[in-house]
Image (cartoon, rainbow, N blue to C red; front, side):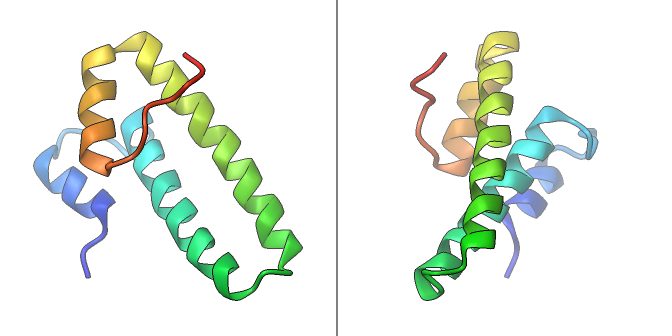
Length: 88
């Protein structure tokens, strides 16, 4: 199975792993993986805390990208199939 981050960077080879887009894609993958884990293990409070921390970082990066470059933000939102941020 090919991850969305791999697809994202096959399209854009010039992007680096430290870029905001790459971090958002990797956080999105972690969020999806942790969410499915927590559906099975409802009382895994340590993973819940980790998910909350990742969600905060993810939200901050999305708001930064929306302020810095609206076009790249819209493209990334569509590519990852995630909702637009309410707090912008």
